[in-house]
Image 1 (cartoon, rainbow, N blue to C red):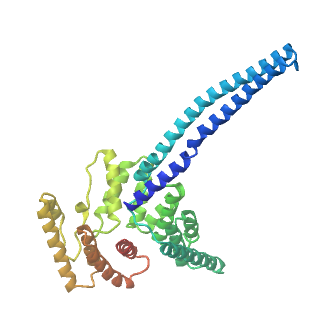
Image 2 (cartoon, rainbow, N blue to C red; image 1 turned 60 degrees about the horizontal axis):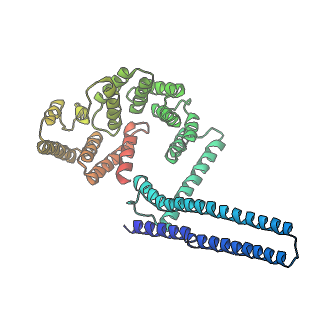
Length: 387
């Protein structure tokens, strides 16, 4: 509210400062015109006196009177035109003075963010300092990688590319990742991340170069969700929407449980499916999947839950989550179980419990190979929950 009062006060002050000179503008013009008429009247009378005294001839007097009268007529015309112009200009100025603040307020209300609290100068300085530090560290990392006689480690180039992605420098990210995609230690994840950077650079378009990287990534690891997602995107853009939808659904059916990448898969499948006239899919259709040692709902359980009331469904889901949590107390080394529990808590909106579950998974993931996709899944989840 204080913000709007401040804006209103500033708008009023600007209007007053703009319109105040108009109070005297008309009066000054009128006084000057009246003075000019008086002077020309005196000149006419002076001509008459000079003619009576014989100082000028009647012809000269008549010529002088004609010239003075011409000036009087010209002054009268200019005064009338000036008055009309001034009135029109004043009207336009008054309208602008009233309309501009009003339109500005409406524009800000629609596109601005008056409800967001302001950031203090110290916080802005700290944020800028962090950005500068990250940029400096990134430049130093690049210099070190480029100066390495052996070309720099693959992990370093991928870290550089990922940092550029977070900074919004997508072209630089693609260039950094491209440095290592032909190496022997390049993994499926390396190629899919490179393809993702290329797609972002092209505003969502899967170029032939990106498509080639996606195909290589899928050949190396057919279960790579990122590669599958972008392959489906490429198929849809090429006009093979039905095949793209089938590919997304098939990958969802292979999931071992609810994981973060399923949500964009479902959203994309439903976007394509809507155009094809296919029934929408939901997370309940696929997760958690059968085949896990930890207890969880079967497909039949999820189908039954879909027919329940909201209260019964909430109680049903809660019972499954509690059952999974109890199982993990007895078997705390079940990494996939902690992932399922974390995602279940996220669905329920219990973010603190979800974060604790993912942190337990993070500790277990320390022994996994670096190319294991669950590591990135955990990082993404914790980044969202801690952010």
